[in-house]
Image 1 (cartoon, rainbow, N blue to C red):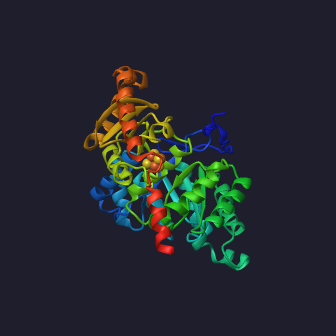
Image 2: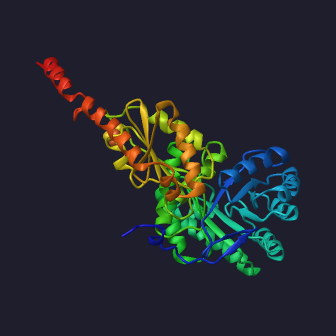
Image 3: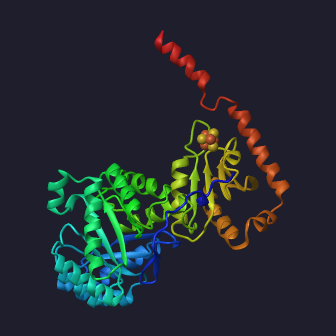
Length: 408
Ligand code: SF4
């Protein structure tokens, strides 16, 4: 049985729209990120928004913490390639100003805008303009009354915080809502989202807050977000990394592609971990290939393998691959040898073939060459290497003699 995205059954949620992007229901899971520029710096912020959109972000959030930021948003929104959400903390008037600026959505933290009349004033205005609001609960900034009631930030406290906010919104008839219950602790956020998904069908925005710098931040965020997505929970995601926000968008896109939840747009590079048989520095070739493919729209799986003895077989399911041979690289398409190229041209050829396959398809690529001739050439190279290396690529026999000599 082929295991694919169809095995992930998403929990049904309502659908809202953040500008042109549908969130919830059967909409694709969207990717979000946040600018780190001053929002009053219109050109700098727009530059970052464009970079984020190019890296895969569907929605971008900007802070709206002062009047200058709201004024900046008024200029940013009409020039942005993706919908803009204003991030609001403490000052409900900033939410009203952001709505005035024309943003496509708001994020409110119920832990720091607490006066019911303020919350309802924002919700009433958002209702009039049909602007959705994310209730952004954060374990680190809950309403002090909830800390008092529960003793600490628990999943129950976080869910109650979201429910209190929903109740205020209900009072003014506002329901264009999505919700997040983020924490920097993965088990805490996972449990909070699980409980929340049992009590609401509003769309959920997933994230591990303050995950930190990569690679640890990536691991934490992936652990939390992927666990929930695999359970069918989550409609939109954000990686919160201490890094260039473009890395957040790339990580979000890569995660959704890896889980089969979004269509692949860029190369999925797989590479062997290398071993004593490797004929090249696999890590370096894989790095060069990643760099060469960059953000090119080539939706293929491409393999970089360290040796021709096992490489083409182990990566036979990849659309395209290269395996290092005797100072030469063996190019293969769906496991079939198509060319043997000089070692220093391996990456360049890989990109050229990837572009050809994307444009013309696998069959056309296989028809491009004399497959029998390519197979014979590759076979000769492989036989030469096997004759040189035999089954003892790591020279284990010599090493064992040396080890015995050392320990006796
Ligand atoms: S493909 Fe070759 S070099 Fe890479 S891990 Fe397998 S045997 Fe080792």
